[in-house]
Image (tube, rainbow, N blue to C red; front, side, top):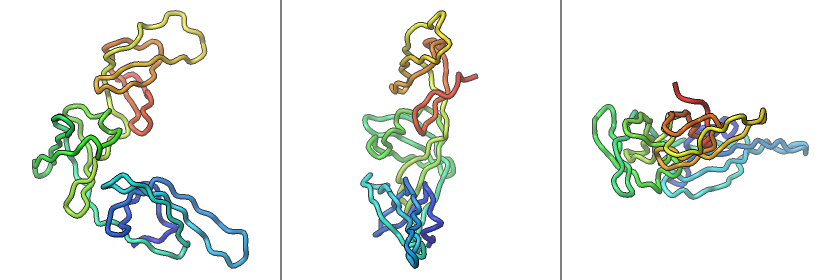
Length: 188
């Protein structure tokens, strides 16, 4: 159990027998005397992707999900499923593209991640904050670009497109932030 005021973004709650990940938390302090603190949460069901908005009183408690995180490695893609291997038991499991969502655009062979397990069922994987990907297609480098920051589109090896600085060329490796799909830096 966790107190409503202790709930943070990323917390996994057990609501109505299902795992929900908190995606937004807002604390509201009413101005009326005697009114209690309110905690407004938005959560996403880790099984169905459905969203939920709920308002809790500051004194309420909510059950946390019985979960476990394990190190896994991405192996390969087979049709619309992505195959992973548990690093401890060497067991393989597959997750659908629908379950992974936007994470599919950052998966490369051998990438090490963490899986989220709820009641023995693998629900999803957590990406590292940044990943290194190779640029497979972009416009040639721009000579004499102005002092103002200009960006150009680039397609990466996994098929996603991001905006990169004008000096980057096809074939270079870049670091990409997995939270928002933003270019971070040229990989060393």
